[in-house]
Length: 208
Image 1 (cartoon, rainbow, N blue to C red):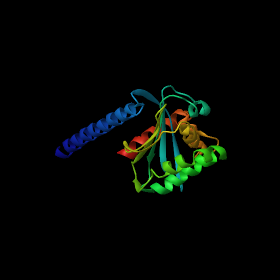
Image 2 (cartoon, helix red, strand yellow):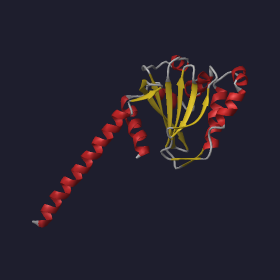
Image 3 (cartoon, rainbow, N blue to C red):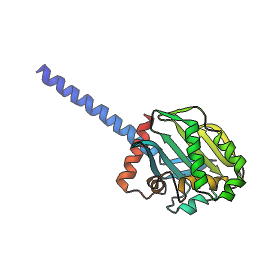
Image 4 (cartoon, rainbow, N blue to C red):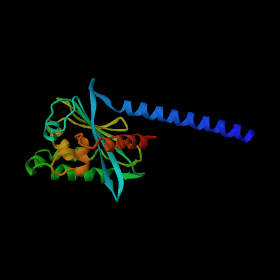
C-alpha cells in the first residue's frame, strides 16, 4: 500500500514539475517573439543556425519592425533592426569569431565598399575580445542616423556610426554568400514550421 501511494505521489510531483517546465518554456517562447530597439518594438522574423564540425556553433535571430522574406529589402531597410547571435558551444575565441565575421563582410561586399570602410571595419573587428561561453549572445542593432551598436550579453561593447555600415554588416548575414544557406533561409523566415519551432526551443535551451 505504501509503495503504491509513494508511486502515486511521485507521479503527481513529476507531472507538476513537467507542467511547470512546459509553462516556463511557453513563456520563454512568447517572450522571444519581440524585442525593442530605440523605443521601437521589433518582431522575430526568423532564426537560423550555423554549424561547425557537425555541432551548432550559434543560432541567429533577426528582428524587424515588420516581417519580410526578401533579403535585399532587409539589408537596405532604413528602420531599426537587430540580429542576435547566441553561442551554442562551450568555448569560442572572440577574435576568431571576429575574423570570421570580417571575412563574411569582405566576400559579400564589393572591394570598393570594403576599401571605403576600411577604418570602420578595423574598429568593428576590435570589438571582439576574450572568450565567449555557451549561452553568450552578441547583438547587432541598427538605428537610422545612429549607426550600428554591438552588445555582448546586453552590454554595449562598441558602435560604428558611419552611414551605410549597416548595409555592409547585414550583407554578411543575408548576402549572396552568407555563413550558410540554411542560416540565411532561417533568418528571412523561410524555414518549415517544424524546424522554426525546433530552433526556437534550442535557442531558449542554450540560455537555460
